[in-house]
Image 1 (cartoon, rainbow, N blue to C red):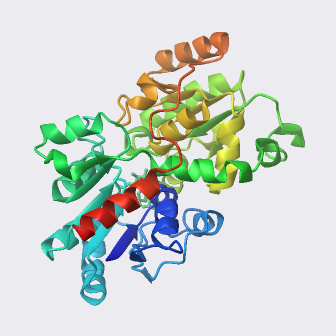
Image 2 (cartoon, rainbow, N blue to C red):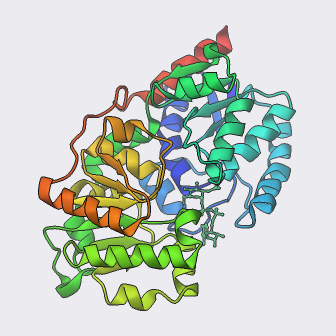
Length: 369
Ligand code: UD1
């Protein structure tokens, strides 16, 4: 069988790496090509991940770039269709929940090609999140659905997805984390020179923010940064900034607020730098999906600055606390964390570094059957 694998945005890259390694392994019975839609294109958002994670150069780059959701989704669809005409694969494999995921799924299914979705069945219950729409629709279109946590199957059953299509395989993002952990750049190396005096502090927190719900409204963004700047006086924060967030901070005139705090901004970081920063942090403050999972795998307390999560196992079993964007709740959570050292958890079932081989085995059996 021949599989066309699709990636588009930063969080897709760590998911596809172990899958490509497996599909292109020495005794693989599959052939696989890799299409990058070009949704993320900056070197810091794309190429550094391909290099550090050893992802093969894409066989095809659709070069779509940024745009409104409609423009971006439509551009991906138009440019992806001829690729399928040329490649004539047995199936199209998509990962995650970004615009590239739904766009390519829709093209494939309308051409009669089965879609394989890796990271299926996650639901936040919040339809104002663009990713939630992408998740629901991609799962409806998919023939084979691979889940990262057992509860995802119930979400899919509720939406009428036939249970025999759904397979619990674990988390490919954690395959990548475990594979690279000993190559992580120690936090002290990344922090030296960034924080005051050129000396890395022994305690620090890591901050990331990029969800539209947090950064697109200037008042919400200001409130969040004010709250985090209070925390930063006790725990200095390193803040690698997503391009969207950087633009919003500038537009809202909030650079001054950051400069007066102990929040240290940086351009987007590579995977190995982020891995080191997460591993060695006292706590992580984030609105990312993937970081909730990575901190759970690393056993590092995570404070999620969102009202809901589509990855509930990180809170029920892992180190994650869902806090939202209310200032008092964030501050209360931080004082509790300072007092107790933060939430302890266990690593969820099948987050063991072997999700990609399980996926490979299912696909080979499915194609043969
Ligand atoms: C996308 C995903 C989101 C994921 C995030 C991780 C969707 C709907 N959202 O959001 O789920 O968590 O990626 O990063 O697919 N930009 C650059 N350089 C780039 C890419 C983007 O400067 O390489 C800037 C552009 O100004 C662009 C903005 O970031 O307009 C937003 O990019 P976009 O791809 O639309 O969505 P993300 O916010 O990155």
